[in-house]
Amino acid sequence: MLHSLLIISLLFSLSNAAVQDFCVADLKGPQGPAGYSCKIASVVTADDFVFSGLRAAGNISSLIKAAVTPAFVEQYPGVNGLGLSAARLDLAPGGVIPLHTHPGASELLLVTQGIIEAGFISSANAVYVKTLKKGDLMVFPQGLLHFQINAGGVTAVGFPVFSSPSPGLQILDFALFANDLSTDLVSKTTFLDPALIKKLKSVLGGSG
Image 1 (cartoon, one colour):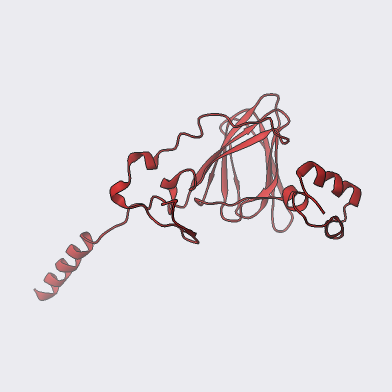
Image 2: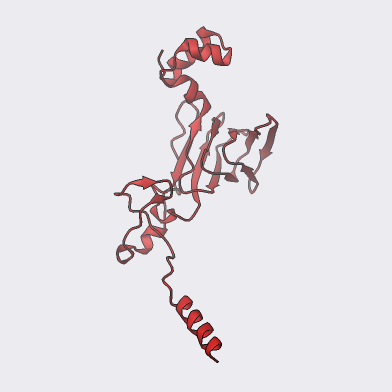
């Protein structure tokens, strides 16, 4: 009898234990490895869980003829602590998202318009490339170099979903040519001609 009462008491305690359903980001506070601290629940509203910023197309008049509109934790505080985020990808004809990585997340891309040629390179340097059409999905494992190119004659649109509220981003071209890493070091580590490196630095805003 006593054993049964103890079990019932334990179950009752567990059922009444405080459960934190969400942690809407307090963007005024610091961000740590686990994300942002939580807003006080009493000031959280339905608006914190809705993001409308992906309705409109991004500006595709840039050098790469592409735009990525993020819905990461900084734009969408409701995803804080939930292990996911999203974005909108717009690619004009001839547009390209250069080789890049997301150090903090895997990516799942859904194509909703046009044709996108996409691919990634594994850590064993194996290449996986596929031409994607409306309704197709492609996954890009965390940390691997990958790219997307408009492979059709009309603007292509896709919606990537990430396995982190803060997936991070490093674009290979910018890492090499958009900073002050010296031309000599870039040449020695990539075997590229210094004249070409200087040209790329001038295009991407680098120096050195």
